Amino acid sequence: MTAILTRPAWTTDLEVEIFDKLLDQYAPHLPKARSLASRPPATLEERENFYHFRVAGAAHDLFIVQVCAKVIGMLPDAELQLFLSRQIGDDGAHAENTRLRAQAISGRNPIPDIQKQVQKHWDYMGDLPIRNWQGFLAFELHYELHIVATLFLNSRTSKINDPDSAKFAAERIVPDEAVHRLGIVDWWQRKFAQASPAEKEDLIAQLLEADEEGQRRRNPYLRDHWLLSQKAIGVEIDDLPVLYDAWRRQVLAYFLDVPVAHLPQLVSVND
Image (cartoon, rainbow, N blue to C red; front, side, top):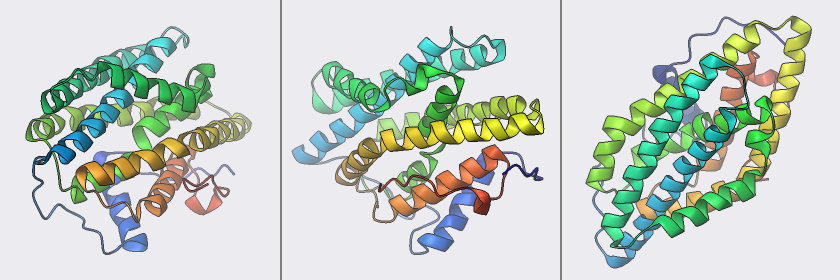
């Protein structure tokens, strides 16, 4: 499967370019930019739905913190450890801000609900994120890169948002998450570049196996979370499964340095 390609650097601009091409192919009716401003949740039902959406966001980030805290002492790579130190700090700050917004919106302490949702992530993912470096990389792909299609769709089609949450996301979360994605791409590319052709074949097989396991494990969570997103923020999700699957193929093709058409059939979010 190995085929050395001339690839552009992975950047946020490249992400937008890839996603917009996927829109042209699979969902040309969806917007490529936000056209209408979102509004705050107004009714009691909307605030309750938005609270649960914010709890899910805090749990997502806290789960990342917990995984990285376990992994940082397992992989003897100083550059990776420094990267994870930043990721832990960033996602910890994201989770704390989201927790405070959930509390302000609902008037109740969201910690018990956040803890329950974090445990669901561990139940879904099992030991995959902390099993070995392949499982950890699959975790990073699923929690940082594979979700980008969802984030793009949220940013362009959501109808409800909390102004304070939106401000923090624009000023802190969006640039932090870009650093995380670019950092994990850089770490993998350095590891992959040092391998011989035979070793690269093994690395490709190992990463695909771990990533496929991650997808099977994540599928129930993703489907539930997308329904929550539709209910809480009014995001368009009808085309999300096909866009998610197509985006994931693009990410893996880039990571493995192979044409998209050379990838095997992958587990779908609908499986």
